[in-house]
Amino acid sequence: MPTGDPKELICFKCGHVIPSVEFYTRVSVHSCREKIQQEEIEKTSTPCDGCNEKIERTIEGYAPVKLTEYGGQNFCKKCLSELVKNNSPDPSNENEKYIFNNQELKWVISKERLKCEVCGKPRWLNYENRWKPMCLACYKNDITRP
Image 1 (cartoon, one colour):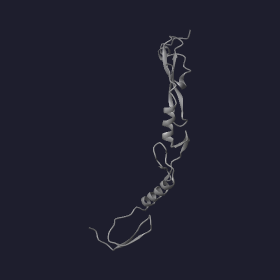
Image 2: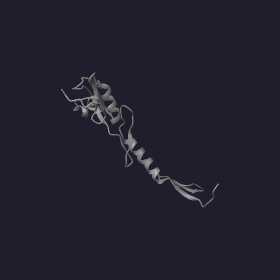
Image 3: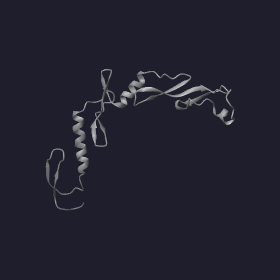
Image 4: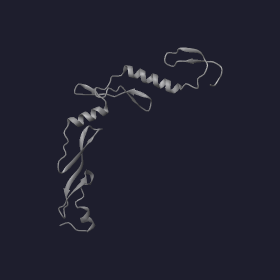
C-alpha cells in the first residue's frame, strides 16, 4: 500500500471536509461535477410518459429531455415517433412503398412501381427516379420509344 502525507478530501456534492485521509489515488473533478449536474437536472425535470426518461446527454453535458404533447401526454422524440407511427396506418399499396420519417412524423413515399414505356414490364423505382421512362434492359438494348 502506498504511503504519503495525509490530505484533506473535500466532497464535491456537499462540501464536507474529510481530514487526514491517508491515501487516495485521485478524484475526477470533472466526473464529480458532471454527476452533480445530472442529479440536479433530474430532480427538476418532467419525465416522458412513454419511457420515463428525464434527462439526455448533449454536447454541453446533461439537459432535460425535450417533451412534446400528444394526446394529453408528454413524450420525448423517440417515443413520439413510435406512437405516431403506430397510430397512423402505413399507406403502402401494390404500386407505392412508404417509409416513416421520424423527423417529420409522417409517412413519405419511398418507391413507386411503374411500367416501362417500351416493353410494359413493371419495375420498382426510387421516388426520385420515377422520371425514367424505360427499364434497364430496354436502355441496354438501345430500344427506342414507340
